[in-house]
Image 1: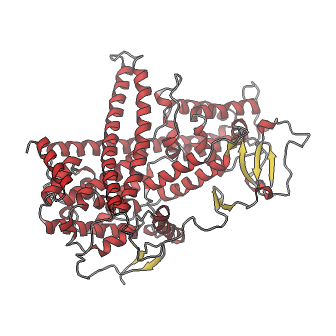
Image 2: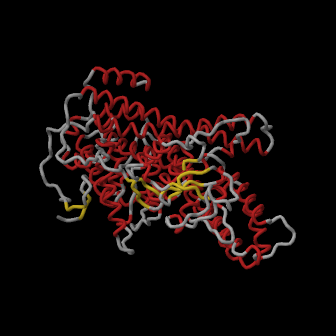
Image 3: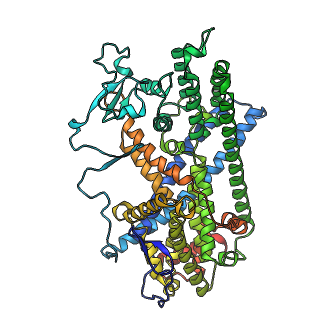
Length: 624
């Protein structure tokens, strides 16, 4: 026993790192049913992103009709259109490739129907227990009562309860039966067992705005700012917040005194600071920055001592936005270089083992890339990715919801999968293909030990692609024992229950890790499955209740899941960085679908009739 690793069933156990057993030659290539589900997830997420990009293009093309191409604004819009079209073409290409893989895997699963693969490990019964399911919230895990009638429901006026008071059932609070309440019924909030459950948009916005005596809890601020964009654009929301402040505090008056306003000034600056800290990408919109300057100038005129706080907020915001701009420029540079190399050189002159002989080091460099891309995804992108923006006449291109960093991360997974396939199919000699496959199996093992589940799944997906899985003579020489353990990780049983159990084990490890142990804090989830979970949570829960109130319980659930993701984003990569290896991973040529097919048939001649027909068509189109 050489190293502590995660058992795929979910427990943290000791398993043998080295396997000296002879090669298993009686095993089939990777199974079709598991790869079908894996490609299905990637296919669905890619489709949703593609549809969102197409909606943006429609709005942008409508705007272009209003500009003269020679005008600066028209030229800028044309550049944006070209960039958007290129992005759509790239996502469409990925979608088409994934769709082919999904269909082939589905046909393979049908052919193998009746052959039940029995796992040597017990299957976790995720979500099958007949117990009250825990309801995640931003406050933690709260279990719903079996009988909804037992829940303590009450209506409370906004700006009335602090975080601690929400859970104080001895307080009666202001409600509709209170004759001193000056709020109408549609301006009240509904609480159950101390948890905010529903309210009108007007009341929820008012509950966000601080006063002299009331300051919204940070958990509420995060949950509301995250999901309110399902109903209202951020710049419109900030404008509403400013209007409530002006009306409540009479900020438009000539004679404003600090003594009368009390702690309102520090409290509103704190809210703006939290907004800029939690959702800095909102402020890429110049309308947000303009409104931020307006409200802070009003406050500084009354509270000049708050200028250092405002300056710190502004500097921190500009720093984050500059980092984002630099990151996006790097993405564009890597993409351009990869495209150039693919156009000028179809056959690689080296392979990954020559560039990085150590599987451990490659896993470390993959973790560098994953954490870098993970850290630049704004939490709001998850909500914006699948919320359908109505393309009305009033909708402008800058109003369209941005998800570029989320898209870039999904595309990275697809690139890594095809990178693995390309590296394997590039070798004509069978022994070299065997060596590459076993190398990637070792890399995947190291990834799971590091908590890097996204690279793990991408590598498994790459080895499950048609043009690798069909290489039966190659797989007959591969020691498949280790690969089968890793492939078991992607078993779709119980909604990928084995992977979810392993992810929980990684989370427990991370929570119990000491402050100085950076490696044990790393958690990189299977990203597309995480996005899909959020999508179904968004689609499966209604945004509004039958009475028209906002369903804030859904807001809590989204906030809880995304707050976990934010924790994972903050992990630092403790491994030495190898720029040469990272550059190779990001820019080395990746074969197209047709080139992969030809390379695969060169490795092992087609045997089945449909393979022979496919090979004939490819050779004819290539002029061979």
